[in-house]
Length: 239
Image (cartoon, one colour):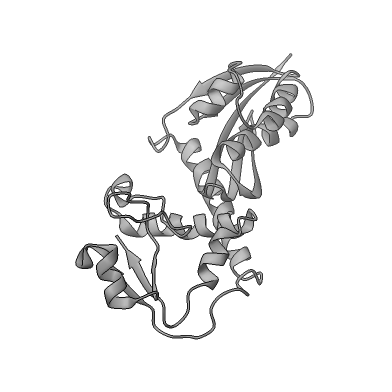
């Protein structure tokens, strides 16, 4: 008799790429929680890793219902074309070939108890990795002058010319691109808009912080180079 298993999966990524974790709950008379993680990766890769970890934990062929809030995962398991993450997609499909797979999509954060639990475990693993890296010595490039940074709003000055007149070559723009104002996007620009977080500025800043670590740990030198260029005389300009 084929064992029936419900595989609840979720992935979490703090930044994109960034630190991430995934959580899996298997229910088939018994329950088992598995947590995995990766560094400088993406949310979709963690969603796939969650499925792969769960399927590989099964010792024999089973009838598996994969419960996910990821439309990407549902599409891949349904035979959809993979334009990215082909290495993981191939591994997932190879692991799935041993089983009879059914996919059940659920809306994220809709109160589904096991989906919410997976989400909490995944976020906890991502947060653990963030904190681990924060104390790992990768901050050695940080400025050591210990002064107070001056930050000004571009709109207060209205033009690049006005900033030049006020601060000379001391000012550094750290925002998104604005061609009308003549501002080139900074490597330090925050890609997360407060409006996308229901006005919760703290949540947007938190994801921005993790995104910065992800850029540094992925080998992108633009972010640390931009930070090294800042000193006690620098005037930071935001939008």
